[in-house]
Image (cartoon, rainbow, N blue to C red; front, side):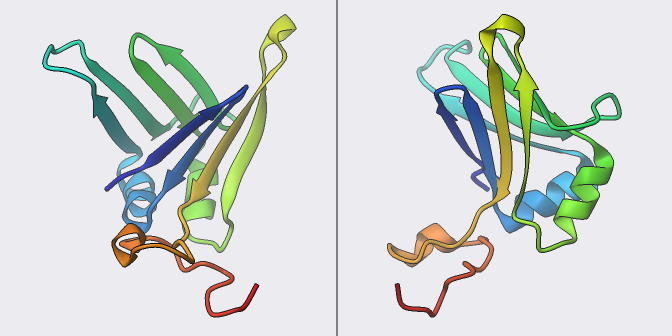
Length: 129
């Protein structure tokens, strides 16, 4: 599986494929990593997990790790519905806001079919732009 992570300005966005949405709903956790080199410390991890301590999606970062926590009820609803995603704005005090987005990964309308393995059907598939 290949959960996607996008960091831009003051926002974090995770896009999960079908199997990852199912895994999150069943096990409460999906994790990915990027290996940058040959040393054990040359790894960056990012994960999404269900948490009983948050009321809305919440992100934090630490030593080579980004964690997004989501409430169990929100994950259960999202996984079993046609809802595309979950979004919240996390207050950062005098540093502004962090936008946290968690979305289902839709099939690309253009590009190689191998990119679309285990994705959700695109709502505009079969239509002309």
